[in-house]
Amino acid sequence: MLDIRGPTPPGIAFLVAATFLWYGVTNNNVLAVMVGGVFVMIGVGLQVLYLRYKYGRARVEATR
Image (cartoon, helix red, strand yellow):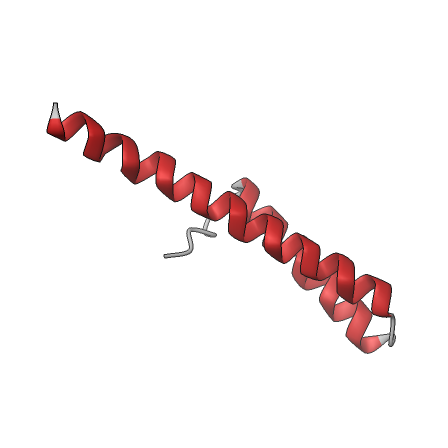
């Protein structure tokens, strides 16, 4: 379901989230973990929008 193979906005958001989460856990920094969680939510939202755009449009055009 996740399309993170290329430099798409969801993939970039997940990489930023992983970096913040890793930094926050290793340095015991709660703020960095919270920022990483926000980027995870942004990445999931962008992924859902991307998949709805990619597959939703083909389904609408096929029914016409």
